[in-house]
Image 1 (spheres, rainbow, N blue to C red):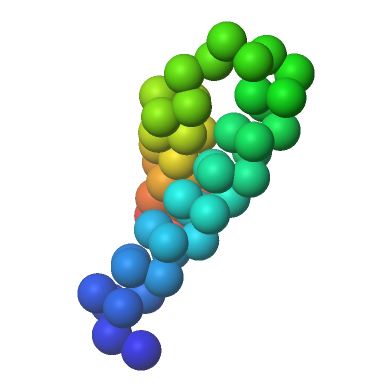
Image 2 (cartoon, rainbow, N blue to C red):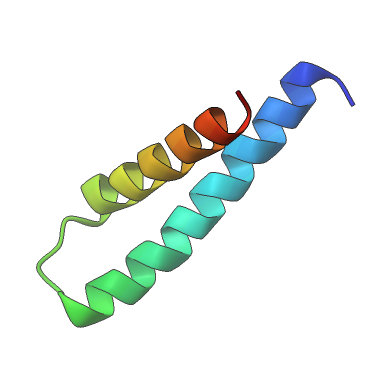
Length: 54
């Protein structure tokens, strides 16, 4: 698997997880902005993946 393919797979997986997390969060706090929440969760997950890969 090429590096680009691995990165794309990671990004896709992270955004799927962020979407699921956002679904759970918006059930608890309906006023959350879904787009911003999903982006924030994905950003944290991608940063954690980057840090753990160093």
